[in-house]
Every structure is written in C-alpha cells, then in structure tokens.
Length: 190
Length: 188
Image: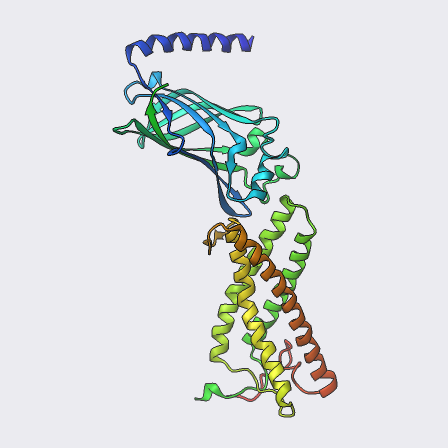
C-alpha cells in the first residue's frame, strides 16, 4: 500500500518534472574526470584522513533559474578509493567496511533543490553498501566559459549505511560522522 | 650566581620530570608490544593512537625538561667515581636526552610518512612533518624499532648502575632521585 502510494508520487513528480522542464530548460553537463575531485574525510584515532575516489561519473542537469528541473545522478566506483595508504585502502575495501566485492558502486540521485544563502541545497538518496538513505548536499554552482564548476559538501553517518561491520562498528577509533566534499569541473553534454 | 650552586639532591621538579617520563616510557613499551601482537584492525588503531598521544606527551615534557635542566645543574657525582665511570654516567644521560627527542620525532615522522596524522588524545591534531612516502616510512619504522632496543638497553644500564651505587658503593646516587627522600640538600 505504502509502496503503491510512493510509486504514484514518483510517477506524478516525473510527469510534473517533464512538464516544467519544457518551461524552463536546465543545462546538462558531465564531469571532466581529470579536473574533478570527489573525496571523503573521516576521523581515525582522533585525526582526520582524506580519501579520494578516482573513478566516478556525474550527470548534472542544472540551471540557477530552473531548480525544479535540476537533477544530479552520481555513480561512484568504491574500489577506486585512495587514502594514500595501501593498508588503509585495502582495509576499507574489505568485507567489514565498504565490501566492494558485493557493493562495487555507490549511487546518489537528487530529488529536490532549494536556494540557500550560500548557494544551493539538494536533497537526494544515497545508496551505499546496499542501504539507501536521504543525504542533503550543499553546493555552489559557478558558470564558467567552458561550462561550470560545482563545489559542495555533504555530511553523513557511515553506520547508517552499515559501513563498518564487526569491530569497525565501534566508533572508538573511527568516527561515525564522515564529511564528503566535491569539486566538479562540468562540461556541456549529457 | 647563587642559583648555579650544586645541590646534593635532585629538586622536586627534576624528580617529577624523571619519574613521570620514566612511567610514560614504560607505558610506551607496553603499548608498542600490545600493538605489535594485534592484527590490523580497530583495536590496533586504538592502541597505536594511545601510543602516539603518550609519545607526543613525552616530547612536550622532554622540551620542558631540557629547558629546565639547562637552568638547573644536577647534583654532582660522588667524588669516588673514576673518570670512565663518570664518562659512562654522562654518556647514558646524554643518550637518554637525545632519545627523549628522537623517539617521539621518528614516531611522528613515521605517522606522517604513512599519511596517518597524529592526534593528541583526540583533542587536536599535530601537523604532518613529511609527506606520504612509503620508503621513508619503512626506514623510520626500522629506526624507531632499533632505537627502542637502544633505549631499553640504556635503561637497563641506568637502573643497574643506580642499584650498584646504592647496594655496592653505598652512596647517595639512587637516594637523591627517589621521591620523598627528605631534604633537598644544602640551602642555596
């Protein structure tokens, strides 16, 4: 019953989305992989550590005057994580943390956008480690001569997604809170 | 200057530095042994984090201790000691002071080279001394390990010498560093 209602809501929003899209078009972009950066910052033993994802794709539909049509779809290959230490990377890829063998990708899809004092905020669903949860992102969008730049952050709790099984469920040495930061260089095209 | 007169015993401050740092170094050996026996995992990270926090504490205390020591000469060695005994005592103490700095700094550099920043009990994070460098890490780890054996050896000599002074020579050398051992010697 709940599922049906949700499905109906999705259909309605899809139809509505198509309708408004015709009225106010938003530009479509893809990322320049070499110039774009997506990373997360965790806290391990009280000190921050940073890991980047070398492989990810982002399909970005966005125009500042057409937030209703904006849409982000980001696909991250978790195996491409790099925290500049092989021991830590292989531990994070392992079954007790990201378990990349079973969950090779993370997926983020936006649902709605709003203007904020500093830029924009998007609400979307992140699917990570087989768990889907809403995660808001705050970002700034800057049009450039070659396309656009998209910079922003998100905050999430790794244990909400079951990232950390067994002893890694403990937050004694690895904090639950994780910050995600991105700086994407966007070029026109879809 | 009257402050430069030589006391008969170590001052309360010197004793405090000595025993607190000694206790922390024993703690460091214990934590390092525990960590070495653990597989890479949460528990090991926790133990190593503690080791790093204690190590940075030793470094900070070593700086304070050295500054203090430069202003406050230690009591003179017993007059009966031979020149090579004096040299051995002097060498041991100098080596201790060097290791009080070198061990924490090589440990700190190890963490930096491995790109694991050092936190001080989770309260703040020390800057990395060097960039990520696996080769440097391996070299520093061997250095840090080797120096820990050197430190252990010197500590055995140091304790052995103190006991020898006390039970064989029956002089004041051990008593003058023990806590709660009466007056501080002659008034300045």
